[in-house]
Image 1 (tube, rainbow, N blue to C red):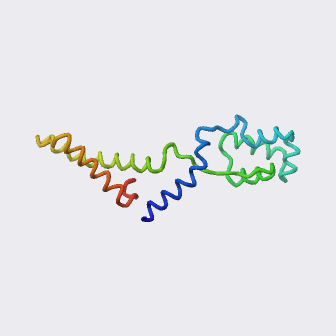
Image 2: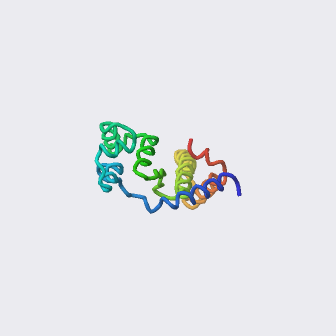
Length: 151
């Protein structure tokens, strides 16, 4: 198995555990505030536990809710809540589907561009021929260097 396919397979396996989280949203005030209040901690109490000032914690909770917090800061504040920050990206479709869709786009741009030019010269090939060319080009692209799909 070549390196590209191995990376795709390994990354896809890692991403599988995040799949159930697709579409899940953070609580309106953010996770830091939700967990702190669920544990019955005041801003002042939690700030002491985190080794920061109360206003700093308040600003951090607000920054998280507004998606402006850094990962490092979120990790530190999560640890002060005895939580672990789990960070991941959840693809909207499988990586294989993303790759195939991009190969389709590139193949269509290449093949249909030539077909259009041929049509202008009144040499348009049959739809069956065009479909076969699209399928062949898509397979070539998937079999080749994937970085060329993203020009």
